[in-house]
Image 1 (cartoon, rainbow, N blue to C red):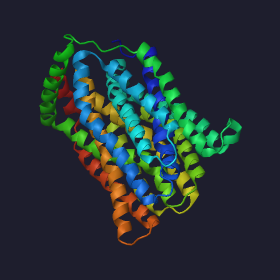
Image 2 (image 1 turned 45 degrees about the vertical axis):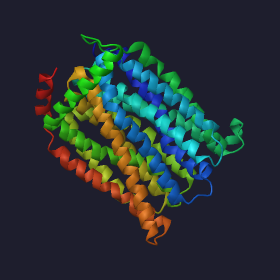
Image 3 (image 1 turned 135 degrees about the vertical axis):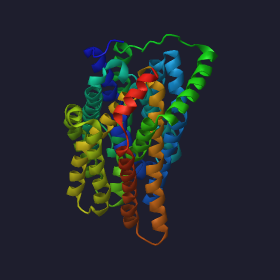
Image 4 (image 1 turned 60 degrees about the vertical axis):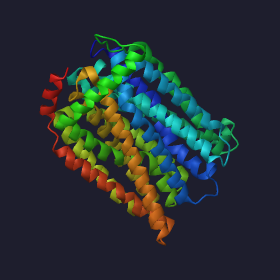
Amino acid sequence: MQHDNKKAIFSWAMYDWANSAFITTVTAAFFPILFNKFWSVGTDTTLTTARLGLANSAAGIVVALLAPIMGAIADKGASRKKFLLFFAYMGVVMASALFLVAEGNWAMAVLLYVLASIGFSGGNIFYDSLLTGVASEKKLDFVSSLGYAMGYLGGGLLFAVNVWMTIKPAMFGFADSGEAARFSCLTVGIWWGLFSIPIFLFVGEPQIERKQRGFGLVRAGFTELKKTFREIRHLKTIFMFLAAYWLYIDGVNTIVRMAIDYGISIGFDTNNLILALLITQFVGFPSALAFGYFGPKFGAKRSIFFCIAVYLFISIWGAFMHNQYEFYILAIVIGLVQGGIQALSRSFYAKIIPINKSAEYFGFYNLLGKFAVVIGPLLIGSFGVLIKSMGYSSDTASRISITSISLLFISGAILLFFVNEQEAKEKAKLLI
């Protein structure tokens, strides 16, 4: 593949524009609201939070178990784009189907949401692995950040329209804001499906010398997976980074997925929470581009440390919020660092792995990222239920439980400190 081709880079980044609509409109905003007020109507908020955490965890477990072997098979069969196509459009169909779920049917809502989340996360394994094919090493930070910036802008634009629909439902022909919110799930599916097309047309499939097919492909994939697992265990720097990433990205993903639910549980107005999330999207766009520019100047690792410190502050400050304006400030702060920590983690990892095994290595990367989503929501949900059972109010239980994720940021930062980037690069070259 030709590196640094502008059309290929833009087409690759457009997939972030496409699928970010799901994580913004569905995962972070309307699904928690609909799940709380429509699909779980009449249920205690502590229980709905626990159910939501379980749904996110279930999706994470499935992807985590499948990610490495899917990556190994894709590498051996030169089929990354085929896997991306399958998972992307599975997510498109399942996200769209949420529009049809009836009131009170929380189980069906969970099932479709889990399947859509698997489509989103599974597709990202192969999307991420294509990064090393479109960008040279010196461009990795910029291109990775461009993808996240496009995601914030594209996801934010559709989300702005969806928010407008829920605030003024009659203007769009809806009976109420709840119907508008459910229809937003359908718009996500259409958006995701439409803007995914460029990556399939203009980004090439990385070529391999010996392409496997049929059952031999599966067998070769398992063989290569065993080999890579042994390599990762002995490549201390890569292993250390993956462990650090697993911990700190857990906190990031948990905040994304549970922030709206947390705001509801401590009594904040739903419309204000949605507007705060919209602010995060549009702050995230220029911030992600800025990290793509300044990251290489200050160093990706140092920039990640800065982002972790900000998130640590957020996880503690969140427990003491009492006013709506504080949630707006929190949204701005999150927007300033969210794209940076995601983009620079991806590009940092891309620099220290063998480029000919990128799908497989990104399978492990996404495995840990999705297993992190398992831990965070379960921590918040279980802490909340436990504290509530001790006689505390729902508000107090929710506030105490949110601070639990600060331990993950601290642990991740400690492990990242011991990651030697130059040593990892040198060892990765020996494996190509």
